[in-house]
Image (cartoon, rainbow, N blue to C red; front, side):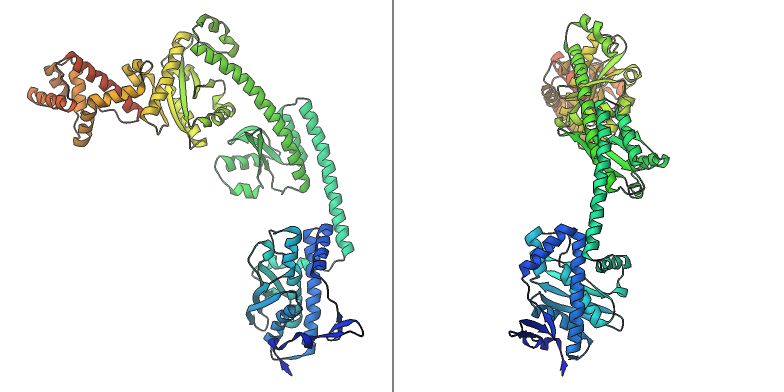
Length: 606
């Protein structure tokens, strides 16, 4: 009889012999085994051999079962064609209660097989979840092995089966794909799968597992010795450089500790590693990361970012290396946190001194003790105040400044929502070079922060330095008020006479005053592209002298009279009175100061 796969029936395949206590399949004895028992066997294999070795063991077990069933089913019946013999495998799997196998595509050639379908109700996936929960990889190992063995036996060529979806890793169903070994696009993947089918005994597996455990134990012993040496370096209060050099030599790998790409300490065991690090950090050449196996580890303590550990080596890190790196990371964290606490303590003392010096009236006392911090108040100095928004960013900015080379030998501290920097020598003479650099650096590292930089007057003693401090704070606050977008520097000289008003007047009141006085005139100039504001400024500069104003602006007297009448109407003010002229003079000075803070081009005479 020529048979098709859908003509297979359980009672025709399996024979029960109550008298003999045997169950047979084509005269070959079988047994019924509890699925729970299979699950327990799987659990014990994984716990004894590990996940990968248990996977290989169960795949080989499935392969052997599939090969034997393929041989048996081919002998039992005469099949209509090769396709029906292939489809008999899923039917047999379903009849035996292993899984509901539903093929959806099969393509057969002389040397080619492609077979796919779904597995429903896989006992393997359910048992795996029962003992281990969802896995990252597929878990129907016996089913995959069975299908590979069955198809290899019946098709006559090596066939590999793999899962594309699996309930055991959280998918909604299990899907399988079968291909002949030669038809795989990626032979490296095929070889990787074939390694699971290499026959090895349990004894061999256990022996290998024991050797791995011995290797792990040896790695732990070695890492303990390294940790003991690291602990001694810590207790002996050795410098961070000595510790990092010891770890680099132990690992034979280059090590860097940096903060925002600024190197704190480094030990390069190979010359090209330093160049690779620079390319990776400065030039953002990320192929360096792949070629040199650059790995990073954060260094944090008490919710404080202290930096990161960077390991560079063209050889991949071994398990021994990882153990040592993790031990070293703990020591580095303790050392750096200890240094941070000391630095913070010193900086707090320095901050307290400068804060008190700039706000206290006992000038003579602070002049006596300024040498303690190597500060010379009688030289040329200026105060730079940087207001930071959002304000909680200042901690990160202060730590960045402490670790940055270009801030070396400069005095700075944090006070009242401002980073205060004392500019001395060349920085005081030409502050723009320094402020341009620091603004560029801070914007690069803290792109979301908004910075408002105010520079106070020149100071040559403590009293004028205190005034410069007040100037800088007032200017940075005024920039925030008039130009919230920030990232701008304004100097004492830019503010002109308005500077006198900033420290003693509500700054919002100043802005409201100029807008109320000459706001309509400014709007008119903007809409009509005229220069009436400059006309008013010239008129006031010449104390209301029409002839001198007309000569300055190259206008006729009649033309100037028309303009002045128009200006008075727009401003609703009488410029013939001293009070009217005073209000306009003050409003224009404030307007020009605001224009500087808003980074606008100050109107110039045409």
